[in-house]
Length: 157
Image (cartoon, rainbow, N blue to C red; front, side, top):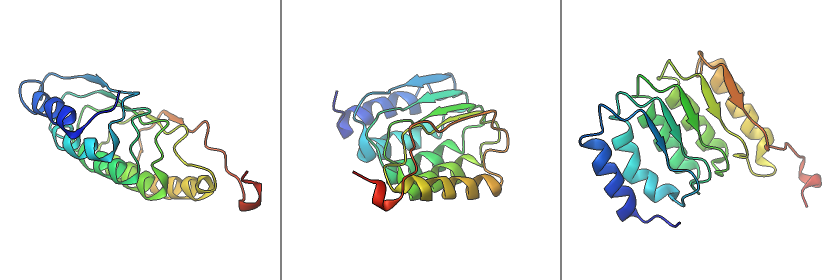
């Protein structure tokens, strides 16, 4: 399913309205939300005081969307689980996401599987490690990094 900004805006309106204080779990994985959809969704998600779990795996967003998510989800006091696997969020996106989530002290489960494409895996791990050293994710119990194969330039095919 390809999402347009219209679909994301409709979901965002529902979340920002009556669901803002009751929504605990949102799964929209395997939808092509992309960065434009994240722009529409992120502000509403940041208002969800009871959001515990967000699954946005395989939503076709990249670094801009990841940074927006991190900034807004950092405002969610109840958030404990975030799944953003299979999105090419790259280094800047990982940094923005993890540093933003650092404000959310209860996050215990972060799924970053298959988020660093190709050569960027080495840099992605470096960015992630630095963000974690700075205190982001201090309450993490589970960090999923599968599918992020670190390769040297000459090994890419």
